[in-house]
Image (tube, rainbow, N blue to C red; front, side):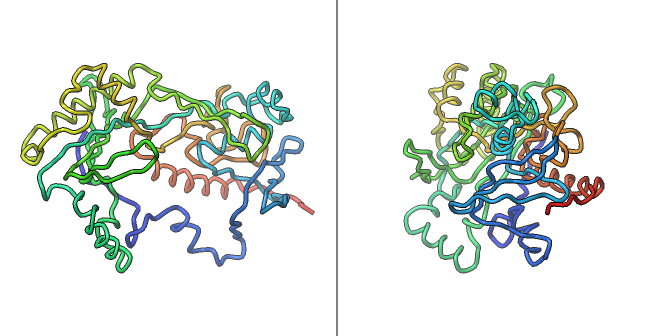
Length: 361
């Protein structure tokens, strides 16, 4: 348990993505080709081995053959979708879609997990929020700062600090992450996200280890058709109960000095929302996901696992998955750095397991 300022993957005012950090600096290498505006349609599987990928560029389809192996790194929503399109997944579902079954792996697409958070907003005293600087003429000033020097508020992450706490003293480790932001904003029904018109700060109360599980499933054999996502947020009653306790804990923090001296009023969920049922309804109505989806191609050795501890797909040679989908359970915190770690570890294992080259002529 504790509180600290967030660490961020920001360089020179820009989000440092895994692409800009790992790929862009080595684009000159002869053994690397980055293909833009290219869609992978399916993995080709022949005699129990992954032999290549079928891709779409513009309106033309091509096949790229793999000499050693194929690594799928499309994320926890797209990686299982690609496996299903390639005949790897629950056999009955694939057969019902007219897809030939290359490997019956019922765990593909299951075990979907994500972090769901309950939002809170407080109106605060002038000078205690970034809101004024991000509205009216102020936002143009900040825009100029950013465009000219990559500095100012637009060069920062909106989430500044966080508390990790336990919803119960009986727990061995924290199960709540309460993120505090020096700005407040509202999600409007048509999709716009607007900075609030009063000086405000906001918080997101995140349940770190949810019990709810969802799934990704195939709706069509057409690789250009989106799959179905069913996250089942808050389907485990204990998830809602613990998140409500997190809202109460956050209220307690904001009621203590020195921060309490800067608070004018609670705006969301508001002082009238006190009962557990009303707080749970607030979480359902106004909550949001953390875009931390994991688990849909989980690692393990049981019947519902998809990859082994070296990230190789069960029963299919020369095929691995390396992204957040291989996590058996979601991390107790943000998933960006752990996913980069998975990529680093996968690179080591691919080199250690170096397979003989295959003739692709």
